[in-house]
Image (cartoon, rainbow, N blue to C red):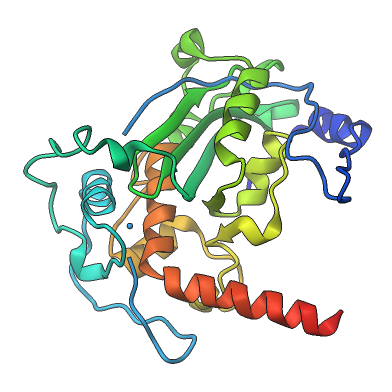
Length: 280
């Protein structure tokens, strides 16, 4: 779990979330602390009568990036574990031809990478933001240059190096670009509140699908918060984050997990909203 810089926390406390006429927080708040980014490019469901999700035990797939990319792009709606290719696809040529699948659409997934700042580099600063659509197409992938001195690049886990800062954008630009994509769309993520906090953004709760809080997923971690790597290995039979992390790969893995169990996600959201209305 990334711990944001104490300077960030102090700044957040000074920036009171603005209220709209309806009383809700505005989607974008002021920012004043570090970050930069860069740009790029680049879907499932098994039904169960109970809340327990079952996955067939195939061999673990190592070609994580290409396997996830292939199934997200080639499947239109429902996805099952059997749809995920065991090896890399022969060709990714279809990607880029279907312009419809390059549009942002209704669902997007976001993931961020962080570097270490502050005393001994134990605090975190945003260093990369990646957003993909329903089909895994990259809508935004950019490095963000921290305003604080980087003490630990955490390259072994973040994949971020000093040379990436040459093409990094300002935090303000990263925030604006991210906000423009998130607006009015369903946001999929893993412990997504950390990424939103790092960007100083808020998003309506009913428009968030978080794989870290989905109850059937938490069952494999004895009710605790499961890691994205553990979820991917258990439910997708794909081993991600083998070496350095890639926020694009993580965003795609999160979208694939969501698409595998989209019906259950949406059902749990409806039940939760109905329960809240009854208790009001």
